[in-house]
Length: 560
Image (cartoon, rainbow, N blue to C red; front, side, top):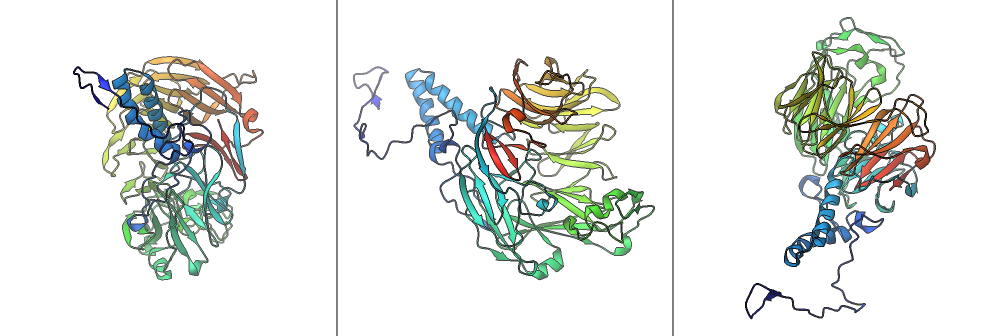
């Protein structure tokens, strides 16, 4: 392409024969389908990416049609300017929208019309690992793939088709992570760490997004005695934890537990917990931190919490019903949340210690979409501590503060304070934004663009203006899809960037799927989930790679 040699500002396009019409032409890219078709556009990476230093998985390299979409985006932008057409710009926006929605926790490509089953994969899901001991399905989102232990292998599924992207054989007693319960906390991880083998021959390997596994490393039994037993950790690490300090520090005070687990009183002091992260590939220490013991209700120290490290249980009905050494943890891709007797802290994947919000241990710490953290109690009587991404305390927010279950916006924190009725909005760093005269209690379902979607206690969905708190719309959802008048409560939420999909349940145990337009508040559709999945007791829905999946112990189904 060049300028017209005769002068002026016109451009001349040279048409060169590049094999058009030749079936054997090699340079023509695949024709992209910008609507996220069932097939390669949602597929996982097909190029083997190298494992970096310390077993850290390199970022996912887009491949297949997805790579061509991204390569075409800047070309389309140039054509739009040169040719004066909006068609190319629409393509750019579509590509950018799909890329963006993939990165949103709970992001799904299209929720404008009712969902139906598109594919089904049958087999054991989440059958290995520590949490699976309790019968909990455990999965991970690795790149754009759904990953889980299935019998004797680690398996990855393509969300668009249900095809098996790759599998990695596992040894005895596999424990892979970080993983989580579908629809719970963020399931995203940069790699999966797998422990396997008998206790005296335990080894570890790291699996990247392309299914490439590091060479298994034998764990030194001396490290177990020195640092504690091993669990899969975030960012390609092995975690070890143990109680430290003199046993004389334990003061049970008035704490009492019965053999069946009923407890009263408070354990006023006990031994601290030291948490150590070692590189899963090399064994070198990444970081080590000690979480101090805090006075805790005796209920956190009963045998049902486990009598040993990581909540290990030998016999829940014990002759010693009070277990002051018991502790466990929920391990995600960016946070290790300690729990159990005297454990009221979380540790980031970089080793920063985050203290709980209240001394009694009745609090939780969650990550924000913006990278920070909230440490809050479970009611409006205590303040919420706001942390930065690197663990620095930024301040406190009055009352119980939460971020939306789904965030496709700048990030908004809503708080309920018993001393100041209404809803109070804050920036992710704790800076006050607005106060609204909303008297009901809410579940904060979603922040989508300029709308904060909340589900009120009396069965109404409301859209609040993110900038001002003004009510933009309200929709009564108390009446179910079958015409019966029942209050429905929020279970989970998803978004496509315009609509919000609410998974609701009522007191009878019925689940419904309700899709709303977040701009207008209009109902898009409302169907019982039984019409989509059949009878289910716990519809475990999770969004991976822009697709909505239903996960059970017996298989995975793709919805669209």
